[in-house]
Length: 99
Image (cartoon, rainbow, N blue to C red; front, side, top):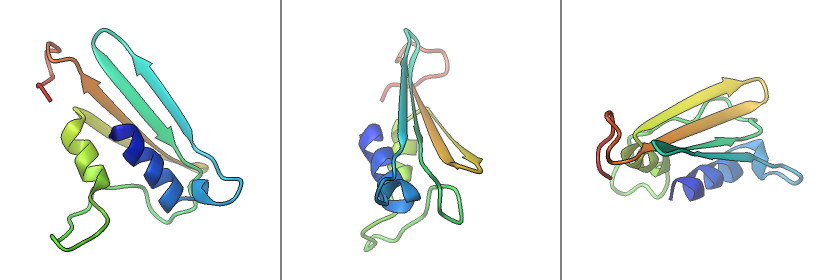
């Protein structure tokens, strides 16, 4: 779900979704955690953020769902785009909680 949501956001909300656009997905797996980063090509006024939506809204809940599933979510801005990094810890990680 995290891969799908972050990839869709890059395509739908940034220059990554334009013709010849692209985004970069990085995945790191260790005994303690899985880290996933998606870097887009930017082209938007602001960085991705969790938004409060009313019950009737059809969009805008994705990053909130990612934040509810992942143990850590960080957003980094650069001149070339945004990177959203998530970490999901194993259940036995000291800072983790079962998902």
